[in-house]
Length: 323
Image (cartoon, rainbow, N blue to C red; front, side, top):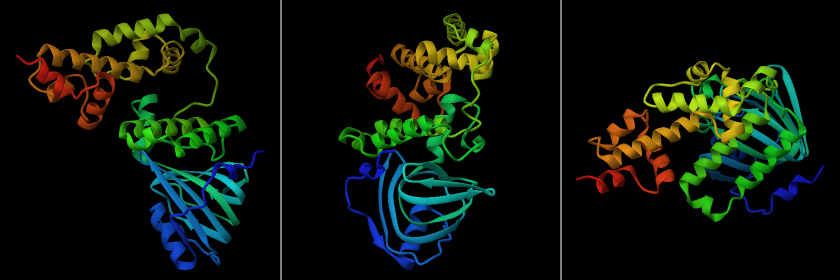
C-alpha cells in the first residue's frame, strides 16, 4: 500500500489549536455537534473548497472520541495515517492507513474515535448530490439516497475514488477560477461517490442477460425518435423505457454504451437546442417563455448550461435575431 501521506505536500494549516478551541472550530467546520471528548491534543486543519465541495486535511495528535449528530454534508474519509473507527446503527467500520470510509451525512449520526490520526475528509453537500442523482434517475433526489455499506464496494472502487479526489482537491488554476468548471468537477465527485459505496441509486447487481441484449443502437434510435416527437412533454426515464419496450436500466446502459451519456442528459441537450432555435427564429417573446416551453424552470442552471453549449447568454441570442 503506498503512503497516502505523500498526497499532502504542505504543512500550512488554516487552524492549529487544542482543547475547547479545537472542539469549537471542528463543530463550526462540519456544521453540527461532533460530541468530541478526550484530551483533545493539538488539531491541525486545512480546508479547500471547489464547487461547493470541501476538502479537509485534518490531523489530531491525541486520542479523541466523538458522538456526532448528523451532518449537513456527506463526508468521505481517506485515512492518511493512524486508525479511526465509525459506528452507524451498531455497525462499526475501521479505517487504517490507506483505507476509505463513508463517515457521515444527513440522517446519519455516528460515534467513534481514534488514538491520534491524519485524514483527508471530502464533504459533498445535498445540492451537489441531487444534481448527480438527477442525471442517473430524474425522479429521485438525495432525499431518496440510502447506503447498504459505508466502506467501498471493492479495492479498485476505493482506488478510483482516491484518484478522483487527488485530481479535484488540487486542480489547475483554470478550475479554481471558473465557477461552471467547479460545478462540473463537484458533480463528477458526487458520481464517483455513488459508484464507490453500495447504494440504492446505482445498482450493484450486474445487468441481466435481457438488459444486455436490449442495450442496442436500435434501442437508442427508438428513444431518440420518442424524444424528437415529445421533447416538450414531461418525459421521465420510465416513460422512455416503456415507449422503447425495454427496462429503464437497459435504456440507461444503451445510452452509456453508444452515446456516453444518460437519457436525461441527452434529452436536456435536445431541449437546449430547441430553445436555441426558438430564440433565433423569434418565435418566443422572452427567454423565460422559451425556457419554460421546453422544461427549464431553474433560470440560473438553464443560463449556465446554455452558455456552456452555445457560448453566449440566451438573451444575447434573442436580441441578435430580433427584428
